[in-house]
Length: 343
Ligand SMILES: Cc1ncc(COP(=O)(O)O)c(C=O)c1O
Image (cartoon, rainbow, N blue to C red):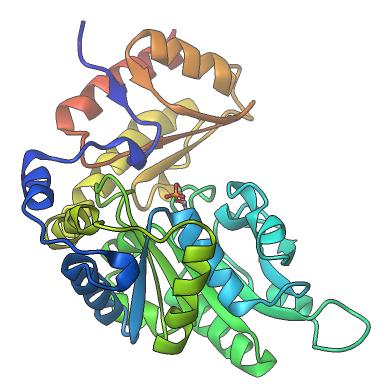
């Protein structure tokens, strides 16, 4: 039987032989003592990439996000974000459970943000209402189908945050894709935010690893928060080396993932479940609202034929391209998925 084509997520990639070699050769030390040279070098590299003073390596993007929001929002105060944001959808209530943080959300608009809507939500510090302390955005937007928030919108949000005296966080798990798709330098993005979380384990193909990027003062506090959450790690340079390798070798090639997502989108668009214009990075949102097929049925039939897709709801699905998917895999997926929709 042909190999399975896995389009569920870009988190399914396996480290390449060259990445494993870099991991095996990593110099290591005890990172809780701040003595792992490979981690220290990765943190300095990523901080510089985003135009910030410091960064902190974390095991997951969820931990990086939660540390960042705790840096910006004290217990009892409020974070504003999109109702589809990862930070409130997929992090198991951590902002409330761990940070004591209140969250209030705006209605998702396909991954984009309307700064006027956000501005109207900000509540000033005071005795009566919960005070807004930070706004979070997601670049690119996972549940928004890999959408890229335009730079002009982010500039407006920065102005709004400054006017309101609140922090601005970016969940940049896939900010690399936005950088490649829109050509915006990473440090141009980075300087807009008080905190940025970035992931090495999604499109960049490392097995593990994320970072929080911010000022030196905040990252010192972040180190304490990470330890409190059980994220103080020891000879973790073996993992940081994978991330370092990914930064060197796997950013430019994301353009290939975007082209492959575009090919999938164009092949499926005639069946009315894809708006090809929305596939701008490595995701293809599937919308079955106007189809006689439903997402779980489609997902199950595709699986039987060796193609794995994400089912996000009764009428919503998603395809994701990544490092372990080549053109032959895309051809196979197109053959299987269009066959199902024609049948
Ligand atoms: C946008 C976004 N942020 C954060 C995360 C969390 O990453 P992790 O799975 O490493 O906790 C993900 C995971 O897919 C994500 O898509």
